[in-house]
Image (cartoon, rainbow, N blue to C red):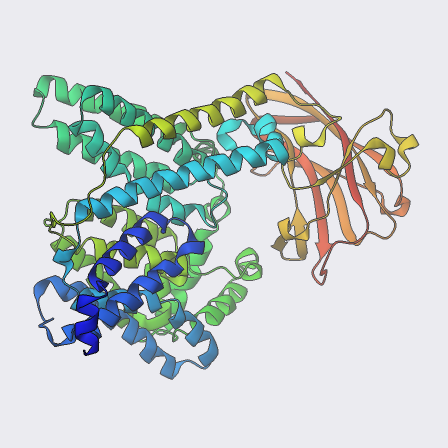
Length: 590
């Protein structure tokens, strides 16, 4: 019995391959589980080789996108030949491996063996499970960590309920792609079930809103309006349809406008804040574009592009971008500086091929909106997270025919009901807790918005210097410090707000820096997030003592914040000694 015959009779590789893809559809939201993709790819390629599927005709229209993806990767590999840093180039190419594997599978696999219905169902429930997991993890962190401080200081809408995941934009892209499936449930189910899915959608909207990513919120609004328009335009009279669509548009756009980060951005722009100060991406885009113009056709090579971009930041005095080693934050510019105009043409050709195929799969248009907008603000294919997202959806969008013999999933209401109950319980409990238990200067977890260790009064050094018994926050994690031109800094806000008219704000806090601490500077601040700033520094000549730092009669109108800033030297490897904060106080006077 030969291997081919054995696999046909004893091992059904086809079923294993399809079920592995469905498993990947459910787990793709968790980057730790993306090894499932490699198992799926190995299984699919093994089946291609054993069954000699590589002999099938692949030069067909539906495979154009996979040839373009391979062309994109191949040209990036060629760019290694004119890169000086070969090792860095290999690391970059390694991140493109998912694109290579999915293209090989896409070229030689019969995609009609896959059920689009099953894929979408597994993906939908996987997405909702990931949201539920994020909510549960955030709830656990809220009651055991520093999220109480964020809630008391800024409100529940400032908590990122998806902060478990590595990058909010990447997980947000994946979650946004379940929105069309939810709208489909709403429009095509019985009224009682449709109401359940509407509640699911509202919870999803709140979770996306909580991430603080303006792009994700805007994309949710755009996709929602498109789906509502397509679904209702032929179902209800125009007299009702257009006012209804206008009302939905106003509600959704109001959500975008009133979001804290959008509000802050608009406030800064109204007060003539420079664009590069509002968002550092403008600096990265400017430097990346200038670098591309220096080698327009071929780029700098995939191995040298990153280092050359850092040199350009330094040349343009973009210190923040240089110190934090930012990439181009734009996939089109990132590709251009890596592999020039030729690489950019390949990338754009991939997107154009998706546009041309969009009639075959209604999800293609939604994906294109999301991916193109994401490409504009993030170098998505520079990270494994991004290449997995892109690989998955290019393959799914090529699956355009449902096979009735594939696995069917019971479309019951148990999961949405479970999702709604758990989600409402978590959100309501966090909201209620934040309203019942207010700011308490003796409890650090009600005012500090960064990770810390809480020290009880009996364990505090020189506690007799404090005016009353209190617990204190011990700052001990250097990982939360951010780079800046002179070293590292940490600047948690203790109190923030917004004033329509001019107000006077008083803010003070007790600070302790031990004699063996390697903190370079500590001061309290108040600022309007534009150009007005107040500071008062800890006296380092008196290290080893508690000092009460207080700023009085700070004048603000509009957004403002007060807090504590700690600076470290550039060469600092780890925090030494103790930095303690206790008993903050603030007062707002009109």
